Amino acid sequence: MRRRLLIAFVALVLCSLAIAWFGTRLLAGMEANEVARVKISVQAKSINKDFDEAVPALAQQARRLDRLDRIRRSLGLRHIGMALVPMDVGVPVRVLAPVPPAVDIGRLRSPGLAAGATLSGVEGGRAWAMAAVNPGWDAPLLVVLVSREVTDPLGPAVDWLLAAGLVAVVVAAIAAIRLSTSLARPVVEATEVALRIAAGDLDTRLPEPPAGSGDEVSDLARAVNGMAESLDRSRGLERQFLLSVSHDLRTPLTSIRGYAEAMVDGTMDDAERVGAVILAESRRLDRLVRDLLSLARLDSRQFALDLRSTDVGSATAGVVDGFSPAALESGISLEVSIPDHRAMALLDVDRWSQVVANLVENGLRYARSRLHVQLTDDVGGMELRVHDDGPGVPADDLPHVFERLYASKHRPDDRESGSGLGLAIVRELVHAMGGSVWAESTPGSGATLLVRIPRTWASASEE
Image 1 (cartoon, rainbow, N blue to C red):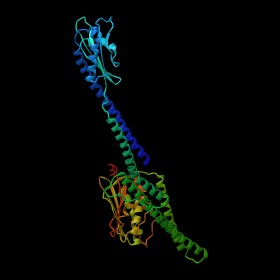
Image 2 (cartoon, rainbow, N blue to C red; image 1 turned 30 degrees about the vertical axis):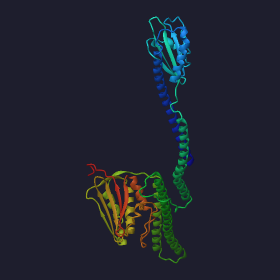
Image 3 (cartoon, helix red, strand yellow; image 1 turned 90 degrees about the vertical axis):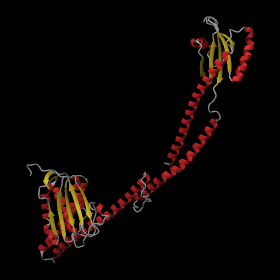
Image 4 (cartoon, rainbow, N blue to C red; image 1 turned 90 degrees about the horizontal axis):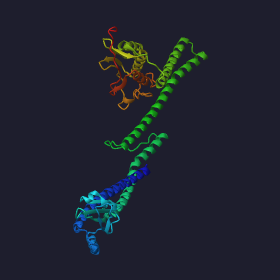
């Protein structure tokens, strides 16, 4: 990354310098050519005025050439030529003074020149111009031809521009090295931390960025730290889950084994009591295994929903009533509140019964004396609230209540423990039916588990 940044910075500076250099040269050259062309045109006209007499005699040619040379030196011109152009195209042009190399002698018979115009141009780095005087209708044209070198507009500044360019490249390289090191350091640190996390060191963290920073590097650091915290929490929940499941499996298995051995040894005469204990413990094992299988099917989406318009209040009350004996045995007051009217929603009745059953079973596990199940509905949807008067859930644990493997730290020791899968199954089923779940709690005042599902209005025939 640092090498790429260095190359990119230096290449950018070089490209910028090249563009600036060639652009400056091009524009300055065009401006210099135009200035030289205009200037030499004016000079050609001025020189021509000094030679507006009639066609000179041959005897005056030496004196004319000497005069032209003095004018050339005084004006700083490279060449001054002179020619007689007869009006008859059949008569050749007569050169009175050498024609400058930059001037095409074929232009001497230009109609514009005969009309009194001044011709000019720039060729090969030289500006040229020609002006003519027509002393009479039939007299030949007296044409003065001048040329001069186009002055480099940049001059000594070229060397300074090159020196400045080299300095800019050096500065860009130094800045690129420092900047690339500064930019790459957080990425290198994040890579090292990610590798340590991948190797199993989940306690590794990046330095926490300032609270107000919102740049990409800060977001990367927060994301890596959040990933490490999530993995660490997941590992802790996994260990807790394994311990919980191991305990839940070992306890009934121990009971079943003990009573079976007693029956084999003949030390247990009450076969009916032994059978009842073995049956209860086997049901407990069956429930745990069913929870594990249900969650596995939910994860793989290997289940189908039979969605129908259902009276949610009636379906909820029927499930809650089934827990009345268990609540009575535990000394817990089980209350249910449903709307007086039919509250219809599109859901799978069996899956909804499983949702309510898991919520009530979880509430009975933590309630001290009272568990209240309430169903309310409004235009936006229906909400099921299961509130217990237990110890509540710590604020840090509230977002994780419905996660798989979660088990509360305040689980009562005198109640049958759960596997931590029931609420995870609730969340998956509710999401599949288009609803949402969350938890609310005030420590010491119990916890409330909430489920919200979309509402559908019943047709007139259903009312």
